[in-house]
Length: 419
Ligand code: AMP
Ligand code: GLY
Image (cartoon, rainbow, N blue to C red; front, side):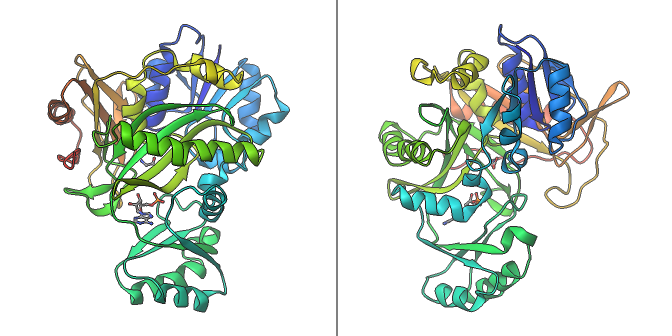
């Protein structure tokens, strides 16, 4: 099989690394990829939202399967576009399915329809500022405001005071995030510990992948601004059998049932962003793709052939498949460019040692320049280690994070501090 992976982050390097190991994989392309994906496949310079160019490339290169890494092409309807090319299988939901991530209001209404536990909410549109403030007045602080549409991961605001929330809701409804915030979901604040569960589905059957916990804040002890993700671990110690049974019965099963009943075409990953409140799981958000850096801990713990699993999605055979999980602890620490998540410089030469045993270096923002590898993004490289002991694994990841050199490098030293 020839496979094309779309994206350029640590998630895509991890997927490419895993797919490359499949005996079913002939040629592997990554668009646009990074310096790491170039080590396991061929990078191609294609624009992810130019579906026609992707189709032309796919036809010329006899691509059988396209794996979509990021959400944007999915929300823009790449799967629907490729319905005209039935010989090419797109792993990713239809545009309607991608609304689980692309529209917070859609996701909340979907959860309400299927009694899936989530924070109570109300949606407001441009012009309803007054009504929104009245609703805020009925809630205790802090206040959670969510732009309905995609806002590059910045569309969720947690406001400490009513004053701040009232002024933010006005700004949002007046276009703070462009069209994405012409509709805003206001929801109850939930207090608890977050983690993520991943399923692969064909819209009817599903398999669970290893769960993960990521660390989004830039600073020690989960403080400071949000980032794309500074690190992750899998498995999650508190996600024991009792918790996972609740997640499956109350969240995973009704979600897939809902997709099926509403006849929403969905061949792909479902990312359940969850929070445990007094022992019960609630959905914070859905994503219609894998997470980054969650992928860097989830995929290395999947034993067996990922391409075989993807073929089972294509041929509706997921009910015949088991996904064995490694018992090892995967710990990822993300190396970042100085200044990130604010502005930062790129183009610094990197010094990357050979991968030691049980350690994987997944490139994120890197590129090749002549014979060297240079930084090319805010999140630069993920160090993943696999070990029998979680604390040892966290130490190992930090140790190898120290060994990789580039100007301005920094990373969080306390990934997993709360486990
Ligand atoms: P999202 O972009 O939906 O993942 O939201 C970003 C972050 O905001 C989440 O990871 C949570 O930490 C926080 N968050 C979102 N919704 C809520 C909520 N209802 N209660 C508490 N925290 C929330
Ligand atoms: N790490 C969070 C995400 O991928 O959305």
